[in-house]
Length: 416
Image 1: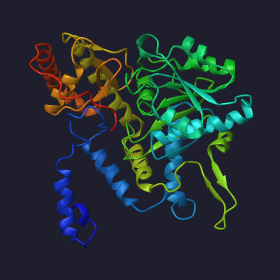
Image 2 (image 1 turned 90 degrees about the vertical axis):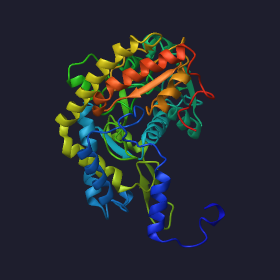
Image 3 (image 1 turned 90 degrees about the horizontal axis):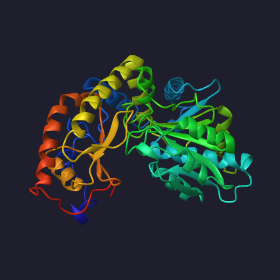
């Protein structure tokens, strides 16, 4: 390879062989021991999503109106389903994006444009979020020339409305709550943040990228859950990742808006172009049709009952794991998680060493820095590996506490 990678043509068979060889060293995203980001419904559903994705290879959703009417239909039906799950009022709207970061960016951009009319006194528009909100909010604010204020969390790693209120000033235009937070799996008090937003005339966004396809079913299963949907009157936008627990293939997310009128702040339009009028609701222009088709196919196949049953299985596995992990000497579960994800760790046990040794044994977790720990994101199939997980975890923690296993290098990061 090296410098000669691009020099000469190579046969299809050789390229396929090289692909197979290169991929052999990669982690399997659907490995049963993957507890970091393995959003698997079941083998049949995954195969259906793959087939739908493949059927729309090469199709571009930006040309949906003139060339791919099926994609426009799929997007409309997926968005309508999400609006129903989030109890949106009549006249609500939404659009599919290329991922959670784009959904969050568009939410911030829409709030920024909305504030020009509703918060014109804001000299440098500012959003207020907790320490636990996704980093993409800061990325969006950086691009838009905004300022972010990160507020320490309160008890149980949830947003503290009093601290959020203290951070509001004349430049504040937007409040952010997580439903749930990626790191801890707990839902912020969205109704209380909604009351703040109403009092100060602010935009409120709920980030449901991790939990958007989980929490509506948790609610309907009768589990205890803070308000998170459009039953909160001040909630204006919601981000939901469909390539997580919607079981679509990357990249597929959605942004929901309380009213269609707000879409004018989200859309970008340009008329001074020889080619003609240009308009998109998303930041991206071209969007592959495959992710949209896979999201639609999975929703059509599983239906409400299928999603609910998988959420029920994840909750049952979570309920088995939480007390068992907390019973391991030196470990604790952080907060009271409501969805399919949670975090555990310790200030007395070297969690970097624990994570590295568990990884050596084939387990994959997300890293947590504050406090030191590991993040678990369950899928419906993890009940089968729960006993082995607990056995390995107890053994590894004991080895670390005894000094028989130590960390190699520094702690891992979310990205590199």
